[in-house]
Amino acid sequence: MKNEFLRPRTAVTQKLTLGCRILDRLLHGGVPCDSITEIVAESGTGKTQLSLQLLLAAQLPVSHGGLDGASLYLHSEFPFPIRRLFQLSLVYRSQFPHDPLEKIFVEPLHSADNLLDVLPRLDSMVPKLNIRIIVIDSIAALFRGEFENTPLELKRRSCMFFKISSKLRCLGHKFQLPIVITNQVVDVIEPSNSWIGNPMPFITSGRRVSAALGLSWANCVNTRLFMWRQVEKTVEAETETVKTRRFIRVDFAPHLPNSSMEFQIRRDGVFGIEELPISFNGSASC
Image (cartoon, rainbow, N blue to C red; front, side):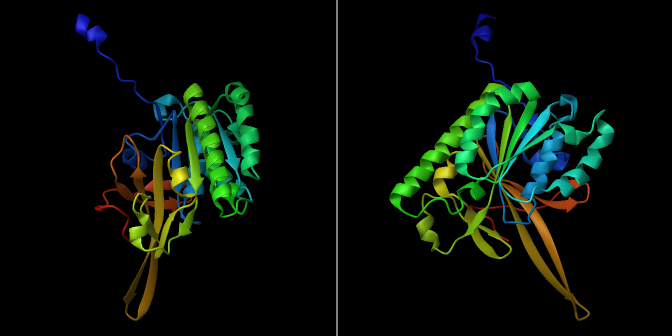
């Protein structure tokens, strides 16, 4: 009995549902609180739509996988996707006694310095408004064109990465929040041997890409999810049919294996597709 009390106990990390039980299965229950989760994808793949879905899912009661609170959406991509958010909110209206849009707080961001000015205000804003998730969409847009490609400027940029991520980690830990950040991709033209020690490139829409902001930023997040598109062409009876399939994979995470699944974007949200047999050995292949 004495040894039982001395044995350290493992804390169970609360998780937020993605709004789909199949996608939740990929993440072993959902997006973890007290952690920074990054969603990387090229434009039009679904990263913003999944982010909007998380804003709504956070309002669900804990018994339904939610966090029973409000959401904060910091956006640097314009225009703000209000029409799509309204469309998704219709799915959740029957589950709440209130309009779900009333509990989504939105703040525009115009630069990395702007974000650093906003973050200290969240120490009082989060408990006051019962905010249970912070989403930044997207981090790459804040650094677009602001820094030159010189050693001094790259060092200054890395320092800003660490300042931003450090403050976000403190907020996530203090209030037990999931922090979700979207990121863009950049094309890779270097030979593969130049990537030793760096994150492996991905394939999307026939392009060889990597997450924007490089290795310095990759070290600032706990979990990286990569979404990609695969275009398939078939010809039947002299008629060409083009089909776009979408996939999401766990690129790295301290608590998850590298795994993936297919998903689809519907009018009522982003949903995983059951039983996709796909495996990886290092980097994505399409």
